[in-house]
Length: 454
View 1 (cartoon, one colour):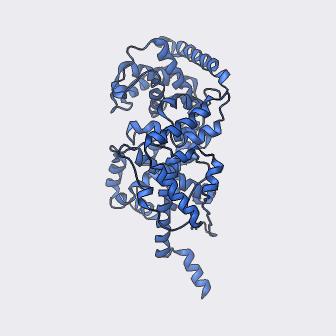
View 2 (cartoon, helix red, strand yellow):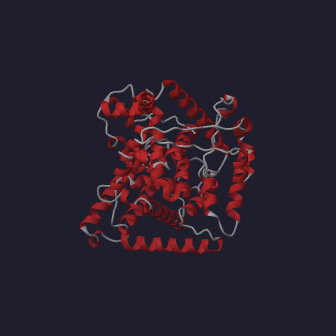
């Protein structure tokens, strides 16, 4: 009799237990959002283990103009954090690998400390941004930048005016040794100029038929790049994109140019232009910039694009096997996290490749407002070599934002909905929610690879 009961408990989840797990997960999400907002360390998952509900006024308070901010308590070290609040998620899989038991427990005092942390993280942005900038300044001012610490800081967002230097460092384009940095950048920028002269600034008579076709395709795609941002419609901007993309494609014959790579240049272009242009991107123009400055910006974009794609080359080689592999992992992860929406999509015959291929190909640039892209890319670049796998969790979190809506739609409705997601009014708050949720799931599942087994 007992064995039957045990068997039944493995086969289905008691609704009361499921409701309890859901409530604890939602509470955990609130806490992690607050901590990620107030902390710069993503290295350990910092969860409250007590099931009591924290005061919503503390965990959900947001200013009308929400921005990523850091609490004054953030001045402490990661060790201080661990002492003030220990946390973790334990995953226990049964023999079939179909259930995950997440056990969350902690003491009352630590939970009260967590509530204070979340409340402090919602303080005014002036004080909190000051603490945040101080930590970045200290990290960047030394002779040797400790990249691991910089990644931990950057994961939760980089102050905009520091972003160009931080991105160059995170991608390994600029060396961490400050004494070598200027010389290396000068040499790499000259190397880019040589490549442009050798491969781009030549007549078509010196190109192969394949190279001519590739250049024509790039010239067609550049005007289509982020068309809702007027800045990218400027002829000179499109010419810069064309030079960067063609030079990159010639230097990387294994993949060549693939549609979608044009989107990946745009965050770099905006970030490196921000060193020379002020105000809103809507008012930017490069018509008055010197050719030397434009060349330096293009070079930085070229080398950073190269560094980014070095870690995901098979995403853009023939048949793009890397993307297909990640789309499969996304499907399996969604099945484990939200079985009802997974089953509904399968019953309706919706294939993940029909919508998620573009997500992986363009890294969500086409799915969210462009002003949020650089914040998202702070986290991308902070992940380093682990980015491809972490994308699966970000995209699962992104998709399941609309779990309830999707379950009400038929095949055609889901296709149309996923092609035109209602993100046009998104702010940083929605993006932080997606990243927080992805962070939790990654911490829960990443050490249990069987959850992605077919």
